[in-house]
Image (cartoon, rainbow over the protein chains, first blue to last red):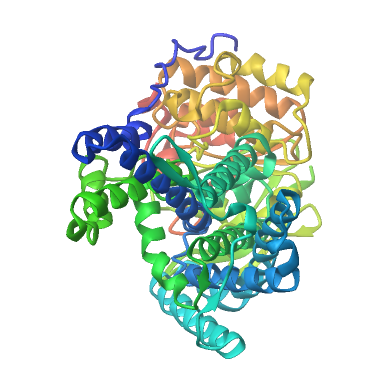
Length: 336
Length: 240
């Protein structure tokens, strides 16, 4: 038996770095047109922060779509819910937020995003059981049901919190900017970038170093076989949906703090962007979404500065360009 | 000899199509039962129905005394049923190791069992940390079978393991299947290659149009060319 196709050496796995380099390429192309180094640094830092915020919101969507094959148009509702949940967490701790203490400011920020993630995770479970579960495998019904669920959620937010925008103040330490030479970089943007990187690192660690991560990656590719190996995919689906909702809530809370105000339409505003990002990244690919988020945010920032009218369609143009180059996205997942 | 697996009057519908139309057969414990038949006879559907991947609309499926027909695939697998599908279904983005880790549902990989598996399939050891998607077709087939046996199983369902494989690899796979059987595992094997069926099978069930049309010892079918022609539209001679 030892002779059984011991096998010639496998073709070496090509490390596909080109897609990961696209944000850098965009920055290098844009730099000469922007001219001023300080403006370039400010735009790039803002783009990275926005990219991390978008990634945090979109990574849950790509997992849900990739593994569960569910078109969740209700994802935006969790972004909005996360934003409102942050106001609930921050309101009673206003004194911590306004204190002249990094520790208290950081604590209240961490508390706010954790509360947002937890609340959205729990509501994600309810949403999956009530709205998504009955329409598994039926894409048209999924679209209708999740849009319907999203409308209901938005109206419930109006009913509970009122139609007016709710102001949301940043903890004191994160107000203002750091100035590097002539470039100003907002402190909160740096914080958002750090949180986004932490979320990305945690997701990659879980996906690549844990059994549950292996199951999710395997489920994205072939969920039937995962079930045939003895794993209860329905439970895994619920866990993934809850995690995706929690990430949307976390991103929504951070985005609300970034904007300084909360409104129920925040979810709808970013839902389309999330879909663009997960399509550019490759459906189901967390790494792809990470690169795509930075790419889209940088392009939007540079275009907003150089050709403001072009910025209105820059996301769509970026998606078209990437799909012409790589029809299945930057980092396509096998089996999808 | 007691039956490890029993099917009684099993019907399966896929959409509007009535594929299995009352399948009755058993697979004796510790033996290799071949499920043969022309393309479209319902062999793969039978395996998938046993596995719980398609739900039987009528009839009874039992593993020993345990009814399977209402169980989900995950629950069937938890009873000790291993499945290597026709498509192999290895997880391409995962490494060989990761594929086997998922196959070992009850916990960590057992070193002694791994060594036993590597004895059959040395390529898997060589490419332990390589992506499964980069393996050749034969190596993927080995991985698919290895994943099905990485933990002790009571019943193995294997769907056309030799499809598209080079003759040298087919010979090795036959030896491998015989070694697995020697450990006491009950095997239900769908196979189009009659040579493989003859060398591996103890029992044979022949399907046609969603029904079992013949059951008996494999050796008897291998020896009866007229019967082969009638049931399968082929003769063993044409495969030698």
